[in-house]
Length: 127
Picture (cartoon, helix red, strand yellow):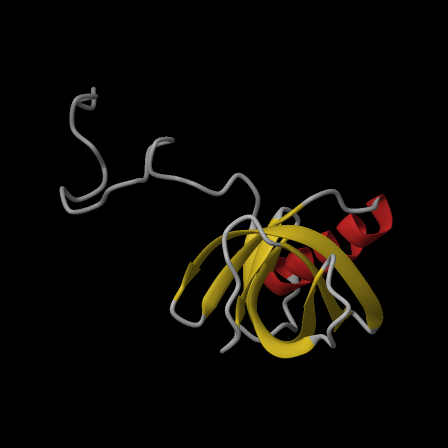
């Protein structure tokens, strides 16, 4: 009978517990252009590069300054569909701005979910 106190993995293998895992929803890394503007501003949107996307939020690279709590509108094209999402800046670090979505429509959620699914599970997708 096998010794159940011994792991089949080496001692260097470790998993993140719930306390270390911050994201509840899957994200995918990408590099697509997007337009970002403050929700209550009449100024023109600025161009940025989206670096990851999930159904709960995204990260983008920009030289413009955003602050935690800023309400932003982000426009981008994914799966050939022009999409616009409103969210709140969660944090900034250097050129990276992380945004959490306020609420997204079920159509937008499905478009993002399909993109993530295709990235992870489509055998033709580039890894």
